[in-house]
Length: 313
Image (cartoon, rainbow, N blue to C red; front, side, top):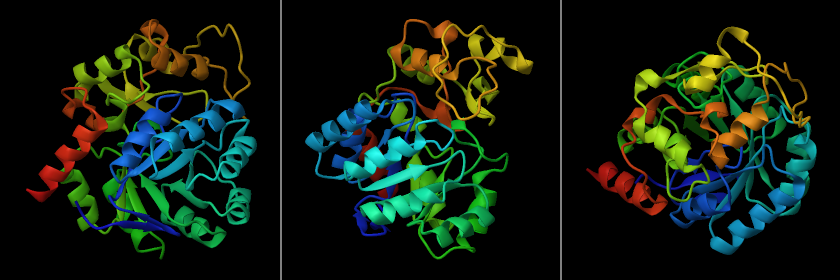
């Protein structure tokens, strides 16, 4: 595949960052497997306790000598403590979206950890560069999970590339080698891929979650309301239809997980049901627009092998 990706002090052999998919989809086995293939393995800290995040980072370090990062959404209550825990554990980089934290750049500098925010405009990218970002991830509306924009990646990417002098990572709807090639030709320094890795053997998603990816077509994907205050993209299943139009679902237990929550439904429970399985009627399956291209569950090694082979071709 294309040449190495440089982010701060890091030299990444394969310019692919695995998406940090919460809750508990991106854990140590997935992150370690991606890092072993030369990409960046990401642990999704959102929704984890401090001790759980610490354990996952240490497990990943036992699985690989490659590059390991952590992704934490700014919207969560434990944001500061989770970020500082990741820095204490000497992760290689930290990714964050769904809000802006100026402090995390200072924490990163003090701890020697590169900070990479998720942005959706040139203005936010410039701001992040001034704060000290080592790179930016530009995410379009094709991405799965919570979205910060309604604009497509191919519109936002050139805007950001022309604005900053740090590496730019393209994210949203990237599934195959041809997508990677297109993003690199547009000027991106690398890509982030989430949905393809959620449908891997090493992913911590439940069998029901993975099966929903294999069965899904492009027509099954849509915008889903979220109590976080941002729209989300995922599979429009019975649960998603039940909350359409602002309909509320009863909340049995509040995890106090978000800084701000509409309490339309419990997103923590819905995402936990997705990773645990067994209660798909109350599960939220986030997914990017390219999920229809997934026809089988592959190992991370097989995914990288296919990408490399197709990229060469």
